[in-house]
Length: 81
Image 1 (cartoon, helix red, strand yellow):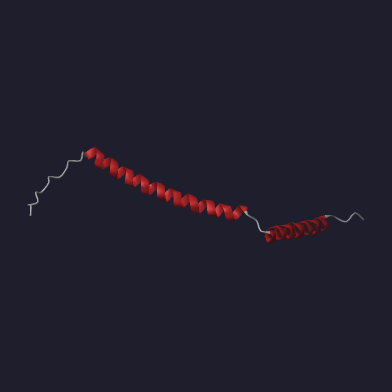
Image 2 (cartoon, rainbow, N blue to C red):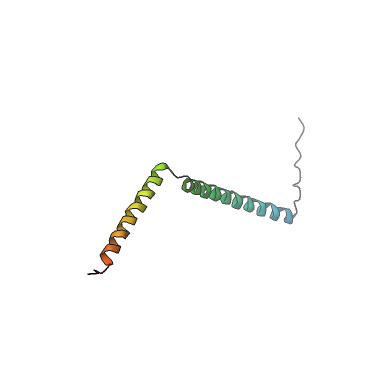
């Protein structure tokens, strides 16, 4: 069997090591931003889609509000007699 000779470690310039580190940090930041954006889009998407029940509820609320406004106006008017 041949004896294994220890190979010397290859020299990696410091600038390359720094660049690798900054690239890894940037990748982590981008991944976090992607997850946040995806979460926000899903949240907004749920707000855009209205169910028919929501339309009915909103219509009834507006109708009741209109009736209440009319009642308030009748109460505020002074008697003309």
